[in-house]
Image (cartoon, rainbow, N blue to C red; front, side):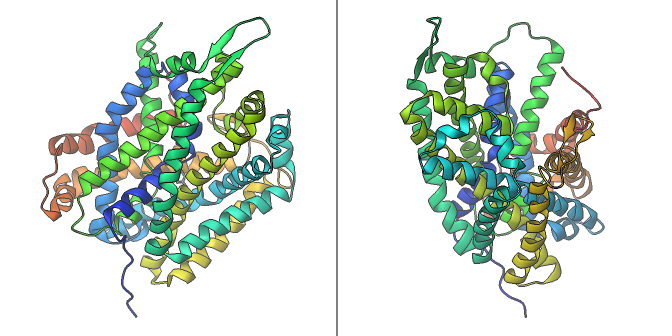
Length: 466
Ligand code: PFF
């Protein structure tokens, strides 16, 4: 029996769901770090220019492919052009690989949220707290399972009743939390034992004032590639997500407007995450504190910052981890939907069957990732890092290898095989004109594939720009 394909009820639902996907851990634990490291306002300016050009082209392409094909990523590319089904397999492998380890990290966020909620946040500031938590066999598994079942339940409810309804509640709350914590961060001040006073506003300067000191051509290239890699990850392109979400968008929706809104949402939250984190870290730890990113920043440095804030630190920490949890949930939902949509479309499965099949596999994968820090512990070296665990290997394969490859092939398919006009026609289907059309064509044919190739070489450690 052919069941009616799911769809978003309205454009706002689509924009909030896509923004929910885009706003994730990357915005919180990587953007602020890169901005502080890469010359503050200089990095932000480059990032904004790239968002309006490179990001706009890639996001438009993914969403339009999805809407045109009306298929999940696994079958969408083959529908756009016969013989390109292989790209669908790669494009579906990316979210399938990310989902398990993202759920493991989601579990860590659940744990920290609970600890702060029960008023015991200060204990997370102790040295070795995080490592002993992940080294435990049971607790990370339980926390991961809580996160995982929440995600699966939303997917089971479906596009409209699950993803869209939840995003409409969560995203406004997330924005309020991010703004509230940012304002607080700007008001703090601390005096060291030697009498040095550091304020939140001084920290803000590090984030927003362009720093061109000692900049070289190589250094500039490095900032450019950092900004591009961050943008690429942050917009959730090449992960099958925007194809899946695009496939649920009505034909009469105004795509360019929605795409602009998604980009604005994602970028504003990334910058606000910087305003939230950089001043706070600067005030309590000075510039040395800013060398951390990723889990080290979120689960080790920030708890120390919250502890330094005194009594209010537990409240701020609790709001912060609630916000992170919301960001992680909506991203994990989108990554699971990319795989579930693929299974529904490719194998004509019912939503419940696809959710269970994908869910059980991801749950086993996520459990293996958690056990990678204890029972299944081993250390290996990958080209860009030493002594890493299962999570890092999966992250490396999906983000550093597969995503750039999928994206380069997408540019070739659209730019050279079916031609950019296919996407332009899809975007203009509702009668609105696509602005930046010429820019789109140049981007997708020439600039984006070259930039992605450089990013790929850097991601796999072949070139080093520093
Ligand atoms: N845009 C997300 C972020 O910035 O964190 C990227 C993402 C990662 C989306 C993992 C979904 C996901 F499961």
